[in-house]
Image 1 (cartoon, rainbow, N blue to C red):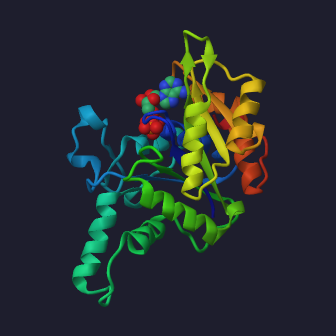
Image 2 (cartoon, rainbow, N blue to C red):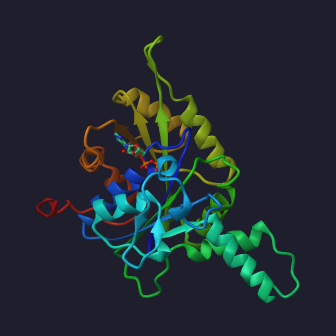
Length: 276
Ligand code: ADP
């Protein structure tokens, strides 16, 4: 299995879920089998008890799990059914660890965030011992990099990348390039700061998906690339669209799937457009 982790920086609600879902669609159109997961750093067991006005819709999977609304994006964009294992929350991770602790599974050891919580997170990343080379798991981590809540997830991803190898596990970081009307400039500093936060956690983003009000020209892409330590073709602009499904086409135009396949060392055939 190849892994693509999607994290977010600068502010929340930038469209990590839409980006992950769009990339899934583009990879599926290239013949890959795409698996989606979402890891949410909140302590609720699931969004079933959360106020939908605050948190958004609850998406119910075929096997009855009450999950995050992004799972709905995945099913609608990628057209693959999700299940109970597709949405993991901090609440579920701790529930499992605390039950093990009460059963005495830890044999007298002190139970700690590292390694016990991080191992529990790693164990929930999609696995398939029988997978062929054409399986890609796209795993989104909710929240924003730098949040206290998301730190065990970042640590788990860092370790996991080391375990499976960088060529099998890449990071996409979704960030914001704000436009300052008064100076008439697009600003890259928040993105630079967010990438530095990732780096300080031992994670180098491979691809940056930049939400922006205005198109990013070559000069600004080159600047982001240089300061954030990624090739220029791995800086992907993500402008506002009127209809969300257009994001898939916009990401194809920006060659997001090509960049991801290159980082994963897998072929990127032309997409089967008849299927769209
Ligand atoms: P996150 O996963 O980062 O919290 P979501 O993927 O749920 O963010 O997207 C947040 C909101 O932003 C969604 O309601 C979606 O409609 C909107 N959105 C995401 N990407 C775009 C885009 N390129 N253009 C317009 N709206 C977008």
